[in-house]
Image (tube, rainbow, N blue to C red):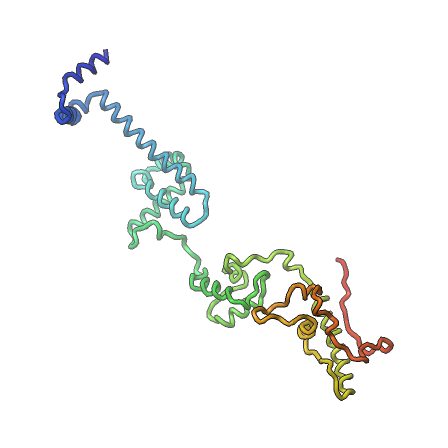
Length: 299
C-alpha cells in the first residue's frame, strides 16, 4: 500500500528539478501539513533528541573537568554551571535539584553558578574568566612572588636544602616585603627540588671540622721550625684548599675544576709526593703537636 502511494506521489510531481523543488517547498511550508499528527510527532521527537544530545555533551564536559584542580578547569566548570543556571532554573528549587542530578553535580554548584552569572552580567568585564576566589587580606601579591622567584635564581642561594640564611638575606635586600620562612619556601621555582630527609641528615665534621684541627696544629709547628731556619723551600699554607691544590695538577685555562683522575689519585704526574716536608716534621720520636677529634656514638 505504501509503495503504491509513493509511486503515485512520484508520478504526480513535476519532472524538472526546479519545479519539483518548488512543489516540495510549498508542501512543507503549508500550515495545514505542519499541523498533521505524523509531521508534528516527527518534529517533536527531533527537537527532543537534539536537547538530549546537548545535555549529554554538557555532562561529558562537566565530568571531565569537575575533578581537576587547575585554574582552566575551574573556569570551564564555572562557565558551564553559570550558563545553565538562569532564572528559569535557579528560581525553582525542584528544577535546580533535577538539573543537578542530570548533570552529575551538586545543587550548591548550580547555586554558585547563579551567583557567578549575576556577578558577570553586572560587572565591567562581562567575562567568566575574571571570576576568581576571594583572597585573604594578608595573601602574597604577584609582585612579591615574582621578586622571590628572581631572588631564588641567584647563584649564592642554596638549592637542595632549606637555608634560613636565605630568608635573612632576602629581608635585608627587600626590607619592605613581609614574609616568613614557609611562604618564602613556597615561592621557590618549580625546578628547585625539595629537601629530602637524606639531604638533612648530613655530617661532615670528620671531613671538615676535624681536618682543620690537625692542619692548624701542623702549620703552627711548621711556622716554629721555619723561624729557626734561614732559608727553606717548604711553603707555609694558609688553608686546606691551598694545600690540596699543590698536590694536584694545575687546572686548565678553560675550567675551574681539577681532573677526576687527579682527584682519585690515579694520575701519575701528581700525588702526595708533591707535598714537601721539613726534617723536623718527619721526626717521629718527639711529639710536638696535638689536635682534637669528635667521638661518634650510635643513638
